[in-house]
Image (cartoon, rainbow over all chains, first blue to last red; front, side, top):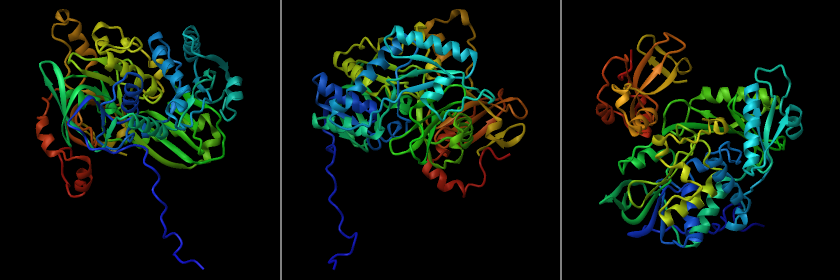
Length: 410
Length: 118
């Protein structure tokens, strides 16, 4: 006979993955934003560049913004050399990240298909494949039959509104479990001595004689030798505290998952023309992303007609999805730049560093920008791989136009 | 679906409209006098406030005319609409009036009138 009521004994809480310290009065480096980029930057600063007296300040909870809301696609098949450089660096880090962090990330290189639906799409796609190959990025062109072979549930019949004419294929692309990535970086950074401080909103940046010396926060003043901004959708708001105006527009970006299903979708499929991208998570949900809501918004939610349009596109591409049930939709805030490339580097204010403008594609860049941004902070000069992504490219005209490779959601 | 109060047609569904970004950004008076930084500012830099924002909307599925609106980018609520040649309303008045999102939801039922009722 049982001596206790079933269910009345609660198991012990599992070990915490990171410490939860109160902020100290001063740090060598303060990172604003405890998402993937902020945590990765802190981790690489501590593990590779010898700076461990770091605080990561997060106004909510760690990894609770876009890091918790993205569709986890990882790829490096961008057009221009500058983009190939940073995204391929990132993909290479992804390939060793589970070992590096000593934490499972469910990183799965299942390949990505970027569909072409018109002759112009076909030409652009082939051009991108050639550019990728010249840059050492794995890429191939596959025709419609090839698409069907890689992903049998794609509808390649020619009598639909946007027929599939072929696709670019990057076999090394894939997905990872986004939350595990945030936790893996947080755990590793915390072990190296980085203070991860949640519920700590930055309300002011203190600048003296052209140099940043600290931040005002909802948990008091914190002095800082250097301050690095990694605030994603709120970058305009945070940069404005230092009087910096950024060419960013913050938009809602929505995504959704279906109920759990048997494995039906072996790869990642993205379509620029019909604005949808789909993969199947390890657990079994179909994960689908939409295009951005057109208006500016900080509400972390978007309009229903965007979801409706996204679903009609998904069902035309994947008729088998017609009977799947939608489980959950949500939105994040993405900071979109005019050329669909990020802004990373130094600023006119000494000791203040900028990482923003990743728009709809920041997740895949997490390790790459974490490493190069950390290098930039440690050396006080832009890492060669992010040099082209400086803020002044908008006045020099040296834009890195990735609307073709990033346009699914932009 | 959100209803947008077109100043010409009244409340219509959001899908009838196109977004036009920040309002009151005039073409430079003396384009030839502009340097690179000023051109960059005109071409690429727009305000991106978290809160009331004066912006352009186009009623493409209705009267097919542009108009301006002040909308809160936190709650997406339209706070005022006006003709494109009218001066920008005082944004500060909306800063005070526009509550944060959580409070906004709670008070939405009780505030029967607002600037956009028409």
